[in-house]
Length: 225
Image 1 (cartoon, helix red, strand yellow):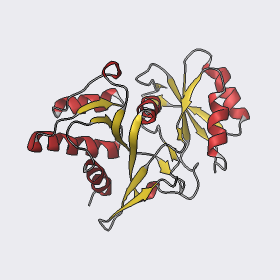
Image 2 (cartoon, one colour; image 1 turned 60 degrees about the horizontal axis):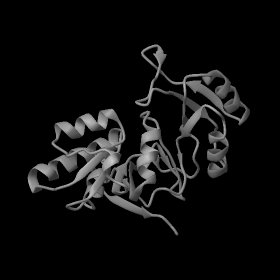
Image 3 (cartoon, one colour; image 1 turned 135 degrees about the vertical axis):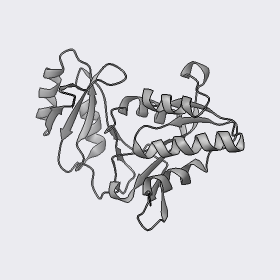
C-alpha cells in the first residue's frame, strides 16, 4: 500500500470547482497532481493551477490541468505539497527536491497550505534531514563559510558530478545542523547572509498536515492558532 498516495488523495478532496490550486513538487506531491488530473478528466473539475517546479508543471500539462501565471492572480486558494520533515508544531523542512524557493513563494500566498507526508517524515524535532539552502552562484563560497559559523556542516549539492542548479539558476547548500532547537531563529539568521535567497525552514505556514500510515489509515494534524 502506497502511504504517500493515500495522504495525497485525501488532500485532493478539498479541491472544489473554480479554485486556484498550487501544485507541489516531490514524490508525495506527484500523487496529488495525478489525482487532480483524474478529477479534471473524470469529473470535469474546473480549476486553474500554478506549479512549484518545471517538473510538476510538465506533469500537469500532460494531465490536462489548466496552468496560469502569477500575473493573472493575487492569491491561491489551496496548495498541496510534501515535506522532508514535520515537527509537532507543524514546522517543516522542505527542499529535498530542490524547489524550496518556488514552494515557499506559493505557500506564502495560499489561503490554505496543506502538507502531505508518510509517517516516517513526522519527527519530534527538526534537523535529522539536512536543511536545504538556496544560494546565488556568485560568491557562494563566502556564504558557505558564513553558514559554517552558524554551526552546521554545509555541502554543495551535486548532480551528475556537477553542482545541482535549481529552476531559478541557483545552487543548493545542504546544511547538517543536527537537532534544530530554535527553527524560527535559525531561519532568520540564515536569510540575513548575503547571497542566500531562502532556506527550507517553513515556519508556521502549514494549516494542516495529512499523514499516511502503513496500516492504510490517514491522520490529519491541524495548526493550533
